[in-house]
Image 1 (cartoon, rainbow, N blue to C red):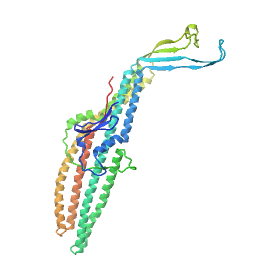
Image 2: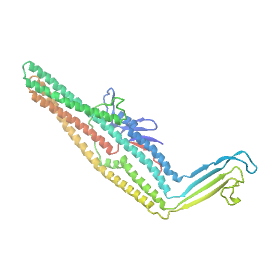
Image 3: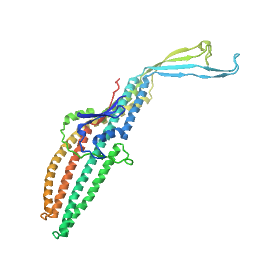
Image 4: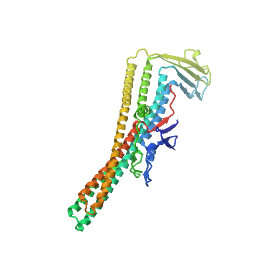
Length: 457
């Protein structure tokens, strides 16, 4: 059994062996080049560790092995059935002039083979479909867990940067409070100016604490996705900062590709195929079935009387083989087969409706994400210009506040505006990265399990 994980992206730059024949490829657009931090973990490493250690992915892998065993059960209807037996025992007493303890044994064997059964080809195909279903269930689990790990990584970067921005702003406000205190002590400012300069720095403590809590929550989610026990190990910290990368979206081409590439769509189609084969296997009881077989017996000696025989011609002369054939056909159904067929047909129709609904939803989902990507790009450009202007205004006000040319109220308003603008720019970058992750998930460009597809029958 050959296994490997492939990322269905067009740009690839690296392959790494994961053991047991499993490998995966990371696309360029998922990786961000960051300055190395001690103890920090990159997005590449997060995805790799999630792929290796995530409990849901491990459970899906076990389900693939279980499906391989179930496939043997479906195939067994076409294989011969062989039974071997050796009745043996001890004989004691006086019989025909013989005495003492003697052992005896008889060899028996039976071979049965299905000659005609309508269910055989459908059962073979059902076993193959079961393997494909388990494969796509693994793909779905991989997509969900890698996507969750990626979102947690971005959330940790965002909240850490937000905390840093607020701390930087608090430091500036504290420096201004010290300046106003010095001016108050020198008699150049009144107490109200000193008090109004102190309050904003204190108010930011709550926002900083909220960002810190959100960062710790994101770290916990990241650890859970990576299969790390937070009680035994240090929570992983993301490496780098959020980066804004504009995207060009080819909606029509990506929609057509997503319909062929997405694991959940493939899984829904396979459920329809499986339900169809199940219905045909059940309906096979309407048709006749023919079986053939051989019965063989081996006796070490000759002249042994067969129990229940009425003549000497039926006694064991030695070893013998007897062939037989059987033909059965259910004539009266009484609703047993018909009811089971209707139940299986209902399940197939439900699966068909679910698959059609999923396929119809993909174009709408991709269009919504594409529109949101354009919105976040426009918002980022607008906020980038506003941030540059706010930083310049804050710089001028900060230079004049120490000399008393600008009031503390104006300084506070300017700093609050700068904080809002920088926070908005960070949020726009964060939302754009989330939209990119959703776009990759919606078009099916995450890792998928590649398996040697069994031959169709």
